[in-house]
Length: 375
Image (cartoon, rainbow, N blue to C red; front, top):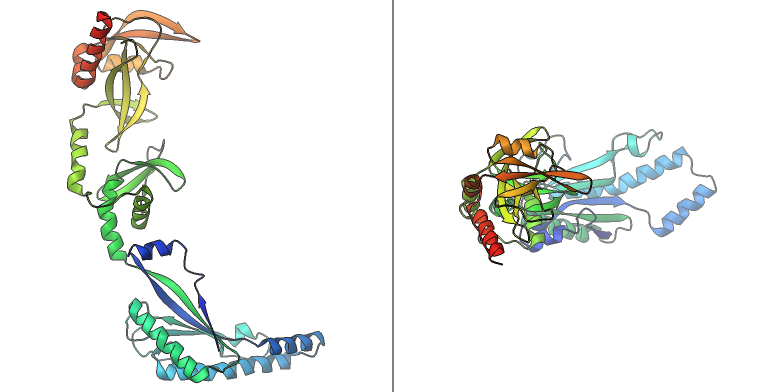
């Protein structure tokens, strides 16, 4: 008898889950098979080369393999609780009352044309009951291998393969993923080969690819943990309560609607100044409750501008002037200035509106204006 340990169905990444306590090495099944010895294989090759193997001999060979292996399965069924070996099951299938599920092939598939029918025991599997625990699987495997070693150790044709799998603690994965998903909320990342951003909605972590307006994907619980591990994030200080502070900042921000690309966007204006003190205004889009840079509303051209005046980047979006007037933000001064192939209009912004939309930024801009005059 020869015993193999088959880990071909176990992914290399499973070791990380086991090391972190989210999984355990499990045993899926035993595969028992009749295989010829090297001497027998050579004898069969010589017979085939001589052309003396006909249908009768093929049938005899199939019957021989079956006759050798059938008593082994019968002995196992006598000492272990096997579902599927007899017509009447020893316990309900959806229960932990049986130990292994028996399966073998049929002669109609393995010896087609030889006139045989019924079970072919030359290859059969014993799959462990998934409703039993990992510990029970290990103990059962040890008992089965010990039984085979005791009774069939010297069997020249018996090959036994122990097929391993991985058991995952799904409850722990679910619990910790729900706890750690707050660490990814609002974070930019490349997920599934696409750039985008994570955001929370109704207790689930979703992913929106970059530039997508309606397409979102639900992030799998296992993926949440994997991404957090890759980013070196830990769950010590993450919770829904600690996460709410950012939402309060979002709620307090004054946003202006902007229709573009067939859908409305909520825009925040941030006020700064260019080098030299000229007014600079950036547009920030709040998508799913989180800010993303949208566009520069203004453009910095040569020359010193009057207070609250700036050239509008109509090359970036020709609809900017209409949007400014509609929202009562600015009025045109009538000044145009060319830069390259583009001509930009100057607008005077309302000081009260800039103060309302970004009080800190506007105060900083005024300070830069004063320092420029002092210089």
